[in-house]
Amino acid sequence: MKKLIYLTIALYTVLFANAQETDSLLVKANNLYAQAKFDEAINVYENILKIGYEAPEIYYNLGNAYYKKNVLSQAVLNYEKALLLAPNDEDIQYNLELANRLVVDKIEKLPVFFMRAWVNSWRNIFSSNMWAYISIIAFIVTLLFISFYLYSRRIGFKKLSFGLSFLTLLLCIVSLTFSYQQKQKVISGSTAVIMSPSVTVKSSPDASGTDLFVLHEGTKVWIEDKVSDWQEIKLSDGSKGWLKAENIETI
Image 1 (tube, rainbow, N blue to C red):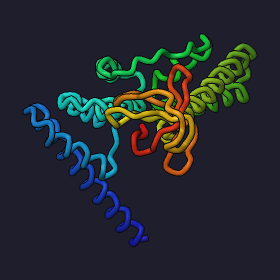
Image 2: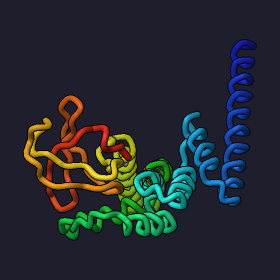
Image 3: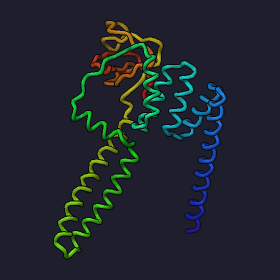
Image 4: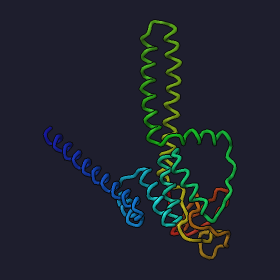
């Protein structure tokens, strides 16, 4: 028992020390950014990410620093990463839109079925973690309503409890589904950004393939397949082709 207590204390000590180190680095990075020392700020923000701390604010600030340095590909990449973690953040959306205006490739988006667009808009209101919290709370409330239904002697209250338990259970299921979908967007690595100034997209995964079109830095693509060091990508207008993996970085 004593060993367990000592181990727990040691674990909390390490976590507290890491949290303090992260906060200290974050304050340092923000101060460097405020002083327009963007190169130094970028190094500190990236060091924070390397030690395993991820937050939309880190990627957002890193994107801003790269934007100030006119490194468009990195700015778009980090804004996109921030948006994955905070899909409804208006500041991130605005800055990403500003960066995308500088992207050379202006690609039309295929129309999305209105029901799917409506569901996506609701799903993007919260992050994966927030939807998970909502799901847990909804499940607990469902159990409370079920207990009211089982133990109440008043018919009207039993009917009300049953109806409310059904609604909160539905909310629990929907929230859990949204949480899973948002998490998959973060970990799937199914989207990427063109990092090279320009790259020729081929019809097949080899250098002898037919040239299809040229993409430029900052363009967002969807990864469809992989063969050796080649990846098949898809654009928002439905166009597909192959390019070397070294030319893109996953979001």
